[in-house]
Image 1 (tube, rainbow over the protein chains, first blue to last red):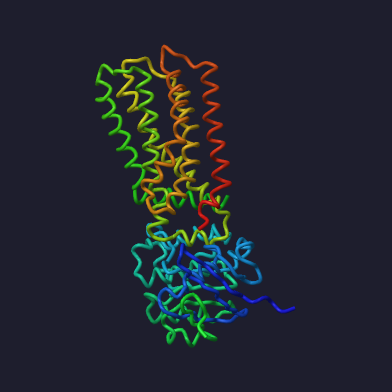
Image 2 (image 1 turned 90 degrees about the vertical axis):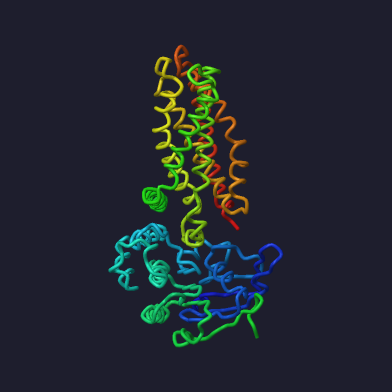
Length: 209
Length: 225
């Protein structure tokens, strides 16, 4: 029996009040596949990633991650997903190390995984610095370390290139080149094209033809 | 439990480094004591012990609201909610951690406020039974923290959160103040603690238990979008 799709959406809908952020998204991401999600501002990219990460509930249609239906099996989905949002999702007054130790505890990961994770993103020399004192690009690296600390099966990244320098982008390329499936919302198609298998365009909450 | 411990540690570290909540609570309660002392007639203390203990409990409740208003401020201002909600923890763990850290902040505030209360209002009376008074305050703190963390989570999702929290919290605080005043009066001579005091302490413990159970059970729905 083949493994389930990493991501599967059929007619996925999500509304915020009267506004329909997702208006029937149909999308599949195969295991190990890297898919770029493009489209104009307000197309629904961030909302789609937040639904798939189990942060918000779908409003209709079907969404599943690694074969687990959302929202019913959200508890099974969350440990499988590495979600890096538009913001770094780290506490500015905690150090880089303390931030990862916190998330290690939340994900049930050994604190010993923190040092290698910082080293992977080139922050081992800044582990004791507060996140607020790191540059935008370094905070983005920290966000990537946070999202991949628990070795997830599916990566959901929202604008991961923002603030990253060339080394940071190379690091992102290496992360996307692993065995995990990835759905990456980005406006920088050219930067990430080499690491991706295909791109999907979202417009007005739907996958554009 | 590991997640709750880590989240509490995070809150305590953030407070140690930012000093945003506890110093404000201490200054607020001190200012409230000064104002109440003048309002109650200075040295003559119009209204006697009942007025003084009533003032103590009202000050505790309002100071708690001040702290609770900042309970989820960092998560909201830096949009860290998504990081917590995407993690595979029971969402009630977020409530539990916030309730524990709120309880700790209240205890620190009261460790400063209680001696000041005695100094400002009861200097001429015999010393109160501090053990009973502290037990009452601790039981009330558990209830305030449990209920407050739940309502602060609810208010943090709303638009007018600064207004919403006190409006939601104060009606629930009424029985706490009524019973807290009754217990406190019994601790100050010539009154003595009796069976009524035990019953009132029992009520405070029951209040804390009910809101702890409600907080644990309902927080998931509170943070549900």
